[in-house]
Image (cartoon, rainbow, N blue to C red; front, side):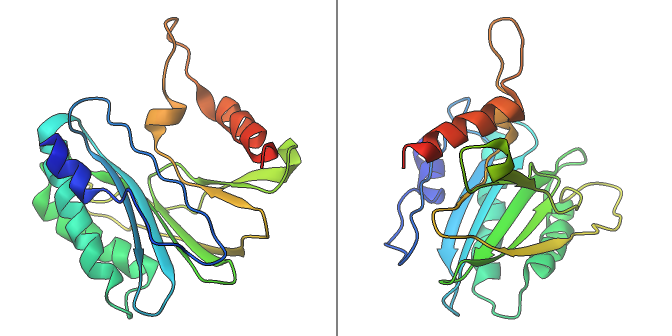
Length: 204
């Protein structure tokens, strides 16, 4: 099951002119519900998704596989905007997932000039870094609720747009990183994560 899941997760990419992309997924158990997906759309833009299915183990991995297949279909359709994808996924997952199941997801689409669109469904926001100071980094958190939740309700998915400047970083992550605990039960937290990313950014 672990090998099958690893085959579904994007781990290698062809060169993307003008950009560098780093990918890493480390499940807590043999299998899990984390989703990592990067694909080029027919129009030439690039699309990335990071998500997390509620739960762990084999059941979460199976739902992750279904969500990945739905994303694979959605990115091939040029008429599907990010907000359309979230609406469609929400409806489909409500029929696929158990009564307490849901998916959090963040979607990013960008072009060769660095213009990006970002949408989020209950997932941690994206971190944008442009320098070593706290002022040089910010969190981009468009609002929107998780997917597949019951009862059905308005998703209210917002799409935020921007331009990633030269040497800028856009970091998508799951809460398994920011909510990791030490032996004293203390969360790693967003502040430590941001500070560590700024240190890495400073190394070039």
